[in-house]
Amino acid sequence: MSIKKIALVKGDGSGPEMMEQAVRIAQEAARLDKIELEFIETPMGWNAYDKFGDTLPPESFKKAKEIGTIFFGGVGDFQHDSTIGVDKPEMRPEARALLALRKELGLLLNFRPIIYYKSLASLANVKPETIPAEGIKQIWVRFLLEDSYFGNADLKDMIPNEIREKIGVKLKSEVTGREKIVADIAYYKRATIEKYIRAAFAYARKEKLPLISIDKANVMARYDFWRKIVSEVGRNEFPDVPLTHQLVDSASALLFTPAKLHGVIACGNEHGDILSDGAASAMGSMGLMCSSAINPETGAAMFESGAGTAPTLAGQDKANPLGRILTGALMLRHIGAEKGALAIENAVNKVLNEGYRTGDIFTKSDDPAKLLGTMGMGEKVIERL
Image 1 (cartoon, one colour):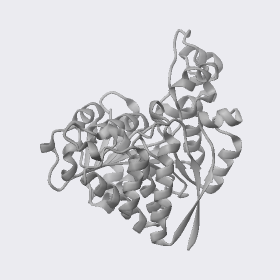
Image 2 (cartoon, helix red, strand yellow):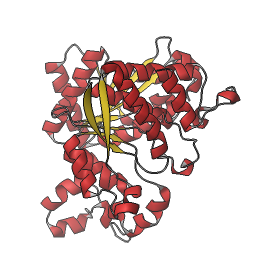
Image 3 (cartoon, one colour):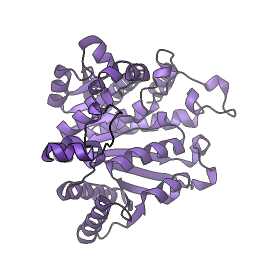
């Protein structure tokens, strides 16, 4: 039995409750591949601030970087954001912890798989007839660096103070709301786009799926740049992979006819953030969403469900843990535990096909006896591994 260390961020809100289920299921499943998972707690978020006075304690940051594989339970809650976060905006953990980890570890590729099964069409917020018998795969691959999320931090020091003040380039933590103008710099580097899109094309080739590139090339210079590079790499290096260019506004309209977005979907940081959340809602619930962020060169990775922290459900045993559990499957696949990853995915599908539901995906037609809480859903998945 080999041992694999994982940095564990339990998270804020309902995060610890959901992660408790995800961790024990991942540990159990990994044993199918003769791997013992050792989780090392690395507190981050408002829960860490309450203990250490920092949403990204230096020791946690150091451990996470050293271990290189992070199981991330989500950070942020409304109460702290509207109190401490107002007085100390630099401590808001979504920016302080998440963006710092992504940048420091070079986490360029954010995989967010959205899988539609015909047998689970009743869960989706789309018309059942839009889901074909063979199902749908939408593999969202969000470009996780640069763009508007990092532009001001990365480039503002290159701009003379006088010009910076004139055009309003500021960090988010510096904004008071009394400025006459505030600007965000959004940028892409050719080398980074090439690295990203090669990885996306390679994944599409491996999965025998088309590649759909999302942009706003009809208006924005950086997306005209994006489209030209994507076309060039596709034409010269991946001529066997079907390529479609899709404008972001029309792509948002296609979320409710999901078969039209069947494939590997390449999108920028901002567009990927928004569209993949919309895709998860169209599928049925953010609580089902799983996600991984990977450095394709070093193998460093962070596994974080897109389901958020559900702070209003904290301590009530109501939050849906399936997104965290499925994210654990992505983590197992990344470390080579393929049997365990498949076992988790099959167990989750079996539980859902048997009609078990948490409150966020429960409908009037569902059996009330099969309405489960966080722990109950975790137990059902464990039973079916």
